[in-house]
Image 1 (cartoon, rainbow, N blue to C red):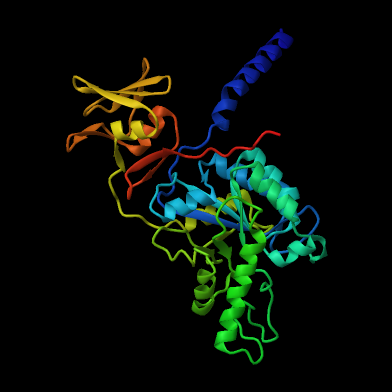
Image 2: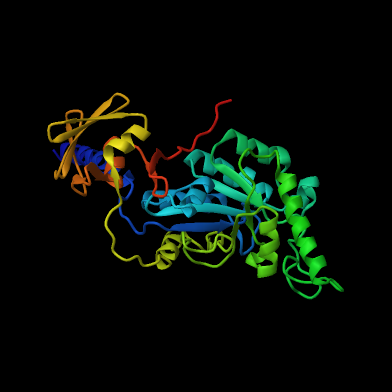
Length: 380
């Protein structure tokens, strides 16, 4: 009898485990922030090297997986640029950045980023491309960089100067300090030429625009920023630990450090949460439902008091003033009611995205709705 009871209890526990597993694996749907981006900063991924800017691959992977489970959405560099230009980003948006172009990005971080489909950008010290293994910490080769940027649509590169990632005898960062006997014109020419050299050496290693940079040590000055802008840099990153917002200076973008060994996944989550900028209450972003579906390649037709939408093989129905919509024969609850405004049937962008099961980006300046680019790896 006791053996039978034990088997019954064991089977019950197995059944409970099977029931709970999908629930625990489900990502959080909480919205912590909107219309701002947590830009994370890393440097070196290594199993045995130790420093204040070195973490193991397991910690790196645990951080990303934890943020994913909490409902954070990782975006690409291009999506971040579009956001700065006015486009929407997902709630809880995160951009991953690495400095220095170390080989450990290719060997330690890239496999994890690829498996999780997490976008990232690495800012490269291009002087080290001539002899990647000669640097104090081995650097990536041109072939490794080109492989990553061309094999995926979510790994990007940018400048971290060509030869100005060092300190001058005065103790000043080479990007902002003056060399002995250097006048203003010579200084400006040195910074301009170095930035041009950095961009030139990265040309051909990516098909994306080379217009981003991270300042060495996070330090810049108005004079230095003016010269890197002349060299074609449109976006530059600091180490100021704040959230990035659209209204911030695009050449002084803040970043939150995530690459120190003491930053556990939970601590990183709290670090982001502490820096969320308060946002005044505002109405949800709404779009013309018919126009949006047409821009996505579908069609719309009005039938009585309803708007019929078709996208691919799916059909949808919106009723004005209703808090539900239909997808085929299924009913989908909406967070905001469908409205008729100025002769158009409008729906909250978030509701439209959930209804058609497609992440969307909206650019108010052009009135266009587009599907977010899904991170992908090209097959060999």
